[in-house]
Each structure stands twice: as structure tokens, then as C-alpha cells.
Length: 213
Image (cartoon, rainbow, N blue to C red):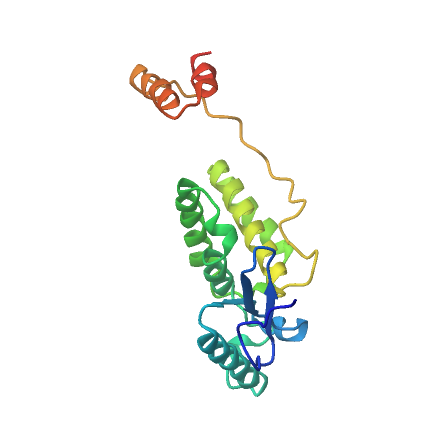
């Protein structure tokens, strides 16, 4: 027997789906034309159906205002790279990263925001990306140049997934990055001992063996 969804008289664009475990997913999902205006899927709380319905109606009102020109930043072509950065930081993909990776990505995202934050994401093209990468590379910061190019690629893919850029339009693809040679580094004995100890404490003897070799 099909169970009744948590939100009764669901507003426009509010979706509800029962999972295999009996729980419910409730979300607001804009159609393609609305996504092109800068709107994205919003997860709603199935345990609070009244608040979920209210939030869905607020989002629908925002769509109407954007179409009327009241909220120009939401119109196509005015979703900024800064907006994409903020959306990516709040995404599940960013949450799934390891803590150290989030810190590393955060630094790269801040640099991109400083340089390109006010640029419309739909206007950022491959010639611009290529020129920027070459300029970074010529400063001698080869590792940073490659890292920033990869970070920008992640952002552009995220923008595509949100509908803020056309599919297969990532300007960072086939940039022919020059990967720097690994930097030589000798670990002191104190660091070596710490790695062996941490591997043993974490139940990862293979890691300890690899470090010893």
C-alpha cells in the first residue's frame, strides 16, 4: 500500500519520493528553463512539512520575481563565478572531501574568487582560461598553476551540473597542463617514526610497510 507523502497539497516544483527504507526525500526542483536563470535543487525537511511547503512557495515567488526582472542576478548570464564558488562550498561534493582537502580547496577557491569572482560563469571561455594558465605558469609557480586550473575545472563542471553553463562546455578541458616534476624531499627521522606509529595505531600495517620501504 502506498503511503501518503508528508507534504499535502504540494506547491509547484515540490517533489516527494519514498525511499526503500520507508523514509521520504522532499525537495524543490526547478525545470530546465528555471535552472538556466540560476536556480538549483533545494533539499527540504520531510519532518517539517509545513516549513517545506513554505520554503517551496518562497522559491516559486523568487522565480516569479526573477522572470519579472526584480532579481536580475538570477537571470541567465549573471550567475557569477563567485556564486558558483559559494554553491560548490555548500554542495554534497564539497562535504564529502577529506578535511585537509577542503582546506586546500578553500585556498584555491579564494584565489579564484579574488581574480574572477565578478565574472559571469557563462562568459568564462577557453581562451581566457588558457591565457590565465600560461601567465601563472610563467611566474614559476607551476604547481599552483596546475592546481588552480584543476580547481577551475571542478567549478565549471559544477556550473554545468546546475544548468548555469551548457553541457560539455568546460573551458578547462584539454588545456595540456604541464605537470611539474615531483619535488625532491627527505623526511626527517622524527617524521618517519611518526608515520610508522600512526599507521600502527590506525590499523594500517600496509601503509607502515610502504613507508619503511
